[in-house]
Image (cartoon, rainbow, N blue to C red; front, side, top):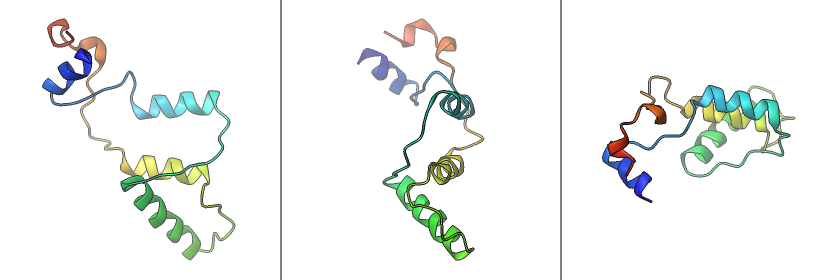
Length: 94
């Protein structure tokens, strides 16, 4: 809890890697079952699914993991300033 409190004081929460690295690792290690989004992920998913269907791709399943990756890729801010955990001063972690 102290870690997250400290991170909030810096104005952002972070993980250990950027999305491209996480996506690469997932592709290496995972067998995908599907994608189900909610909130903005669900809204974007529905918009992309409708677009796919309108363009003639009617064989696409609504839980297609490839479409899920398109959703995430669209929502990830490519210009976001990532804060690597190893660069956070120790005084902010406790």
